[in-house]
Length: 407
Ligand code: FEO
Image 1 (cartoon, rainbow, N blue to C red):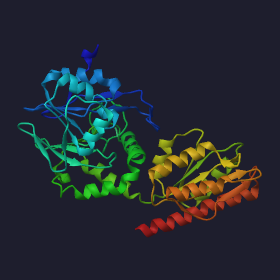
Image 2: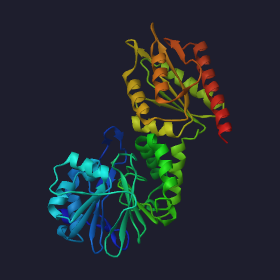
Image 3: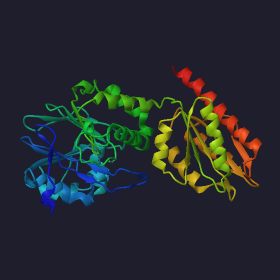
Image 4: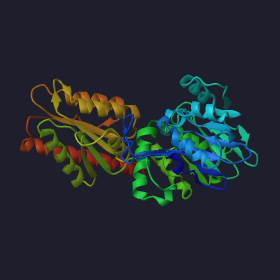
């Protein structure tokens, strides 16, 4: 059956030999609504080179696609740009099957691969500025430490000007199209935003530093003609678009949009959320209520990236915030959002600790809190609705002032 899985030529010397995971929906907490791909690349030069592998269950896809152009034993080098298992999971098998002359990874990559696997050969560490000749072309390496693992690195095919960027500039998007410009741009932009929010938001300062240092390390952006990531379609046009987007998202500027994330027991907190949204909207700020009962962490993290204000609201339950709220606050805290204002609100019956607890978590996550938060006893009364509406207005005014100040 596997004979129908073929390599796809993407340039003079490079073939895509990866796998498409159409049905992936849960990527350790990331809701991959549109599936994903695990991209691996084969360079046909005097030294035949495999760049990264695929997630282990797709080993047969990798093997079949490679065998559609060469024999496995023809592979001379394997490059591991990223030791996370969706890319390195087949490295032990490929070493056994191909018996390569060398396997290259960053210093931290060599360590991580040896920590993951018992490998039958020594791996060769490379660092920023190192170059490996493939014959007519060569690979140039740039470490990208902590974007997003300590081992991560870029490999650049110098004559063909292709940057193999591992997770960077990728997205979880299963498609029959090989190139980004062949895909619907609204879908792929959302998936890029989502990928950045959920995987890279906390590394914004490092991303800015890396982009600024690219000319110094011998890889100015204008040299790059194609970006071949490990997930999603390949960039062959408009490369500056995605680089500029990465710089923008790294800064997390304030956008004129507020996200109101809530859970509710008997509907009162939901009524509060909707009244707050009306206040925001009537004051000129786009407002998006998101119920935790019908959404997921990765969607909410994306909305946090694309907002200016974030409000969290839930009922008090057994003297605590609701577990769904604790979950999302824990997740967002790990992503270390910056430059976001917000507050908390919620309905209560007799003790009402949730608002205070949410505000404490929000402070720890890096949100700048506006006002004292808002609690409302039991069902929403008319005067309670007005307070919510006014809270929305107050957050909107603060957000608009700050947006005006950011220039
Ligand atoms: Fe796609 Fe960080 O692995």
